[in-house]
Structures are given as structure tokens and as C-alpha cells.
Length: 511
Image 1 (tube, rainbow, N blue to C red):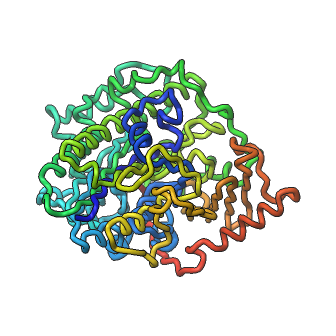
Image 2: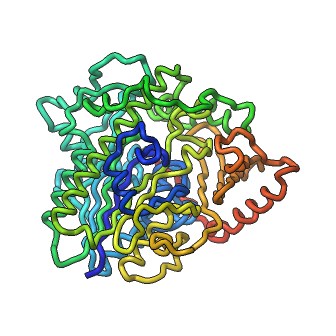
Image 3: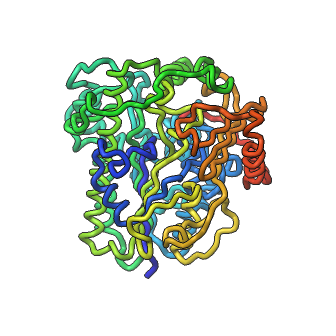
């Protein structure tokens, strides 16, 4: 029988936030996964925000080609229906998705009819569980996170959301989630939540994944995507995970003050602009929920401790799924992949969360792979992308090459073979509804350098990551870096999306 695939993702998990890279973080199950498999230390996201990155993971296409150039744009069903899940299903795989999909927009301006659209809550009254974007069975966390300044819309959309508000009595789970067990020191969007861990989305996703594994058709190979919404903000870590990391003992970034005068114009403009949105609630959320005012060291440490705690809870849930896999004797014939959609600034350069400030903190993501023939305890430094996962899954299934995808299979690198890569690509066409200014950002990342061009203005930033890993010295336009810039511009011009038509899909809301 063909090999099984267990794909596990987190949301906004930095590439360096794992215990085997930073001992101050508790991730014993991810550490074990890396020891038993291969860690890709230079894996980047195809986009700096959720929807484009997730659509690229599913389809193996760069954002401008699948059309989801920014959040607030739905992945066309025909495009999503040609992704790895549908192709594996055609080969006889049982396919299932649990957790945060974000292939379609949640906060739409009008009803769109997708299972993630905030106006489509009645769909869940009918017991709907798929199919969706090629997955035969789904249990969605359509929102994944509640926000104190963004009221929930009823009827709630998402299997987890509807389950969540039914916990306790009279929406007790929502009240406990918003309740802080300690006043803290006022870190932005951060509190120790009183929510019981049994009601947390990470627990729910692990539970649903484990239940499906037990009930699956045993004579068919399977592909599961288990997608955790954490550690995406708000940093609402529940007890006891919120106490696992002591704020006073955590190292903070060396460069934790804003240095906008050293950066291209759009860094400041994106932080100070007014989102072009008519809806006052959504505009306010973009202004306040997607931006963070400067934090004191104590506040940053508190935020970091909660962020790490959320990662540790995800890690615990990953461990539960891996244990279920082992108990069913599936270890030897199952590929396990752990990745994230994008990173988080977490105070570096005085910045937080995500945005059009293309530092390594956002660009690089975790990628660990374990499975049949995968080298144990290995580290791959070639520049790769989560774009490469879809063609990798197809190769593992026996489907052969995937010439219509932009990614390249990681199978040879997983086996320790010499398969050098020149570069990996990231792109994001930022709509003015996000930060008040439109931007066309294109990034190329090699093993030792990175170039980002803002096409509308011709501005850019260039870093020699070997000599300047903290990205302090922008070499763009400098005579002494002309050869490096020319080489990276050549690689960027060769990006697959530069030579294909780009569908002009409309912004229909905000994520």
C-alpha cells in the first residue's frame, strides 16, 4: 500500500522557536521528530501572510499564479480542487482536514457561500463535513482565534467555533477565554487565559485527528492535514502552559528598537498608513489588532512567554497525534511533516506580528520531515519552500512528477542526496485595505543572501545574511554590493510567476 501522509501545521510559528534550536523553549515532541527525521533550516514561506501561503501549500503554485495575492481573496475552488489533496484522492487516498484552513475569507463584506464565510453559519446546522478543496472530510476551525476587539458573528461558522461556544453554560468558554488569571504587565494582545485546556482549539484538533485515524478505512492510504491556529495572536495562552516559560529568564532580540530610518520607505508607510476600509470595525481591527505599539522589555518578555507557551501546547498536541499513530502501528509507513504558514517578528527591530517588513523572522518557517527513507538527525541548508510540499506529497504517493506546479519535490533532499537549490521565492501584493498603501513585494532567498523588490516604486532591500544575520545593513543600491544585487535580480526574474498570467481576483473581505 502507498505511504500515508500526516501534514501538521501551525500558524505564525517562527523557524527558530523550537527546543532543539533554542533550549529555552519546551518542544519535546518536535525535538524528537527532528532527531528521527530531517530538519530544513532554510525553508521559507511563499507569502508573508496566511491566505496566500496556505493556498500555495495546497496548490504548489506561487501566489500571483493561484490568484490569492493577499488576505481577503478566496482561492478559486477549481484551483484548490487541483491541489495535492484532490490528486491524492484520485489515487485512492482517504483525505481529511482538521483545523484552520483559511483557503477562503472569513470576514467578507457580503455573503460568498464558502464554508469559511462568516455569513454561512447555517451550513453547519446541516451537518456538513465536506468535501472542501479536495479534502473528502473536514472539521474546520474557520476563525481559529477570537479577538476581544472583533465581535463574533452569529450564527458561528466553523465546527470548532460552534462546539466551543456550547462548552459549559451560557457561553462559559467565551467568558473564560477572555478572563485573565493574572494582571500581568500590560503586554499587547497578551493574557493568561482562564480557558480550560480541554476546550482549546489545539486540543480539539488533536482529538478530531486521533478519532479519524481510529475510524478510517484501514485498507486505504490516508492524507491528513492537521492545522493548528496557534501561536497566532492574540497571545492568550491558557494555564498551565502560560507558566511553562518564565519571562524573566527568556533572551530577548538584540535589536529590539525600531530603526525605520535605515529601511526602505514602505516599512514606515505600512506602519503609519490608514487601512482603506469603509467598515469601521474591520478598519479598527486592521489599525489596532494587526499592529502593536512599542513594548517595554518586561512586556515583550511576557508576550514571548505566552507565545512559547502556545507553541508548547501545539507541541503537546502533536505528541498526542504521533502517539496515536504509533499505537496503530503506522509509524513505519507514514510521512510526518511539520511546518507553518509564516513567522512572527516577536520584537525584533521593534516590530511585532507580521506585515510588509520582510525580515527572516517572517520569511523563514519550521519544516521537519520524518518517514520512510528520510535521513535521521539530518539538517538541510538548501533554500526550499513550503511550496515544495505539494509535489513532494505527489511523488510519495506514486503520482510521479508535477510539471504544472512551481515547487520541486523534497524527496531527494530528505534521503540525504545531493540536490542543490539556487533560490526560493516569496511574493505578496499588499492591498491598500491592509495598511493604506499598495505594495508589490517580491523576495528571493538563496543560502546566504536575500533581496526584496517593491515593484511599484523600484525600492528594495538586500542583505548578505552570512555577514549580517541580524539584517542591519541594507546593501540595496550600494556599489560594493552590485554583483550580489545583480545575481539576485537575475534569480528573481526567473521566478515561475514572472512568466505566467496573473488572475485578477477581487478583494472580497479581510482575514
